[in-house]
Length: 256
Image 1 (cartoon, one colour):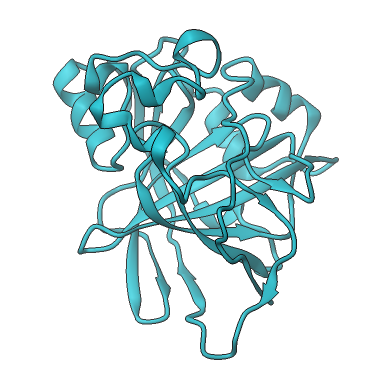
Image 2 (cartoon, helix red, strand yellow; image 1 turned 90 degrees about the horizontal axis):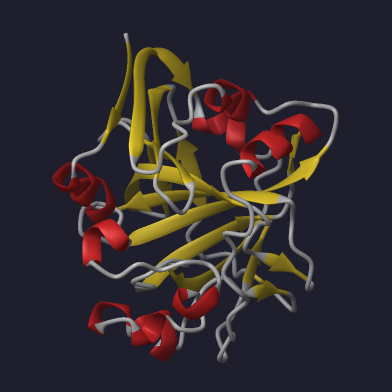
């Protein structure tokens, strides 16, 4: 059964709390991607947002001069399964909520559950100074509250993306609205590149409250979407991209 609804403030609070992000609905402070409430000013909008200005390990970054990962660095393993459609128009991005406890990855012996994935256009990560037309951030959380984000960059080509195709006609137009359909399934694996080589570093959430201590895994290979898919996604959000943040001596590791 299709189900679309406007989330109550309590329901929206719960959905945003579980990924440790904040928004106008959860904090009483509205933030944006430009103007007086944009990224350069979020740190002054309240105590909860101070890390957006004072943090020393912020994301996104420009990825270059990466070092080859040592042989004993924990490696990524992915174990995704198909998920029922659950899409929220958050007011800042298109977000797909994962069914709790169904999908997981491991990094070494640390397990993480997929919480949600969302999209930025242009992509927030830069590779040698260049961004992508769009990216997906797959947000994961461990049992003890650690966060890990898989980042996928998109490029325009002839091959449509199956996840984007399944989502496009079901994204709520109203900000704060949610669409659910247990009969329509998508597999997050279809968002990932075939080659799983990546860069990894220690960073933060890219949206307020900009919490740090987040493990970032940036896939090197890009995934293809069509121009039609990109245009459709950008009609919802275009420009929801945080500027590049200073590396401040952090190391970037390259894993084949």
